[in-house]
Length: 564
Image (cartoon, rainbow, N blue to C red; front, side, top):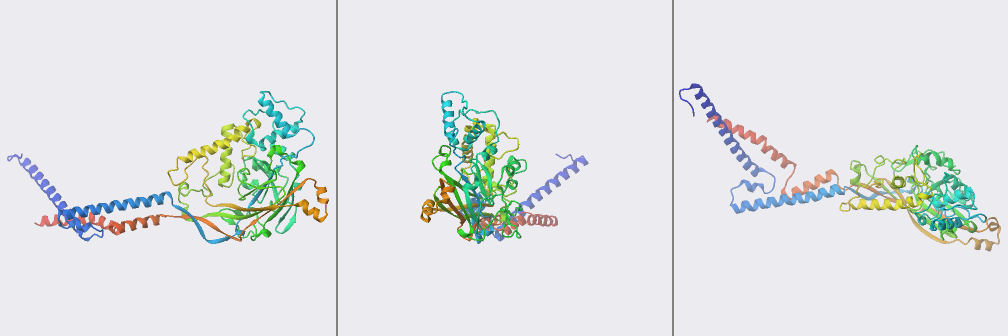
C-alpha cells in the first residue's frame, strides 16, 4: 500500500509500478517474438515435416506429423548408434594390397635346424637310459639317488640332458642331483656332435660348399640348433641380457659372409635403397629351387640315443622371420632320415597404412614398432613377446628360468629339481591367457591380458608347402660300385632339404581404416538427410533463429511499444 501523504512512499510505489510494467512488457515482447520466430522457422526451415508444426491444422493432423517426426528421430539415432559401434569396434580392416611385391624385397626366411641327436651314444660308460632308469627307480622307492660308476663330466651331461630330452615325463619329485653349479651352454657344446659330419654340405647362390659359413649356433629349449639368416644376438637382444653378452662367446660358428655386415633391413622400412644384393639378412633374386638353399644332412645309426628323443629321429626345421627368436617346440617341420624334403615357401606379409597410427592399439588390434617395448628384445614381434612373457611368468612361479629363456645377467637358472615347475608353467600361462581372454569374448576385439602380446602391425611370416620322397643313398652308391663313402661314414643316414620361394611375387595384406572420422560423419549426414533432410546448414538455421533472429525481434517489438 502507498501512503498518499508521504512523497517518498509515492515515489517508491511509482518505481515498483514501472518495474512491473517493464517486466510485463519484456515478457510479452519475448513471448510474442518467440511465437513469431517459431512460425517463421517452421515456414522456412529445410528440415522435413517441421513446416506442418507452424500451420493451423486439425488436431489429428498435428498429432500425426508429431508422431512421424518423432519416429524419424528415433530411426536416425538408432542407425547412427549402429554406425558408431561399427566405427568404434572395427575401425581397421585387413585387405589385399593393390600391387604385388617381389620376393627380393623381403628377406629369405631364417632357417633353424635341430638334430634329434643331442649327445652321441657311447658304447662305454653309463648311458642316459641307464642313468634315468636308476634315478626314477630311486625316486619311486623313496630313496635318495646317489650316482655311482659315473664321472663328474657324465653327471653334468646327464643333468643337462634332463632339460632337453622329454621333459614332459619328468615327475614332480625330481631331486637336485648336485649342488655344484654348471654352465649348460658349456656342457651342451662339449657333448655336441660334430657340425661338419651332420651338416654335410650346402648350396647357396649356386655355390656348393661347407655349411659353416652360413649357419650359426642357436641355443633353444631343445639344446643347440643351427640358424641360417637369423639376426645375431647383438641385433636381437638388449645390452643387459645374458644372451647379448654370452651367446657370441659360445658361438664357434659365425656368419663369415654376413656377420661383419651392418643390419640393412627392418620390418617397417624394408631394405635400404643402397644395400645391394648381398645383404644382412640375406635375400634371393627370384623363385624356384635354383634360387633357394640346398642342405645335405646326415645322422648316424650308432650315435642315436632313442631314449632321449624317442623313436622319431632325424631333424626338426623351423622357418621364421629373421627378427624372431626360434621357439622350436612350438612350430616345426620334421626331416626324417633317408628322405628328400622340398619346402616351397609362400610369404605372408601385413603392412600398415598411415591412417591407423592415431587409433588405440586395442582398437586396431596390433602394436606399432615403437609402442610396445620389450624388456629383453630390441625388436617387438608377437613371438618374441610371448617368449619374454613365458620367461617372466616362469620366474614368478618357480623363482628361476630355463637356461634357454631370455634373462638378465643375474637371473637364476633352474636346476633339474625345477623342471616339473617350468614345464607346467607354460600350461598355466596358456590357461591364464585363455581365462583373461574369455572376459572380452562379447566384444569384437582381443582385450588386454597378462602378456599383452598382440601382433605387430607390420608382420612377416612364411607358409610352407611340403613334399618328400625316399632318398636311397645306399642303393645309388651300390649301383655305381662306389663304397668309399660308406666306409668313411659308417652308419650314415642321409637326408636332403631344399627350401625356396614358390613364386617370384606375392600379394601382401594391408591394415587400413575401415571407417575414418570422415566416413563416420558422411554416414551420419546421409542418415539425417534420408530421414529428416537435416544438414549442417540446418543446425545454422536453428542457431540463427534461436539467437540472432530472436534478439532482433525482441528489440524491434520493444521499440514499437515505446513509440506507442
